[in-house]
Image (cartoon, rainbow, N blue to C red; front, side, top):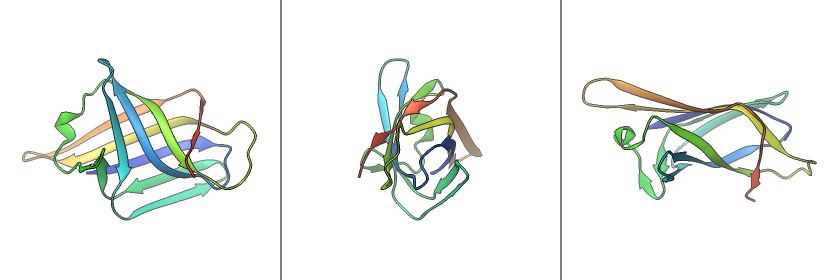
Length: 121
């Protein structure tokens, strides 16, 4: 499974460590990169690709069907060194992509408004 992140931020040296989404029943899914990832931050626009993803501590390959469609991003763990007043992210899209026996499957989860960043250093 791969994950793609696209967002706006006021943190000039942002690095995303994990993303959590919550389904309608209150179940939380924690996603972490487990393999090579790439990222770019230019003028407040952050993008990243996680080429391997864990759900909790387990490899997520082939598990996209375990994740409900109707979830919301509830937490973002970040790592940054510079002192930023009121750090935030907004306009975030977190997209999961995986292959099944039949075809590729993609699910996207979004936040539109600004949310505070959980500093994880």
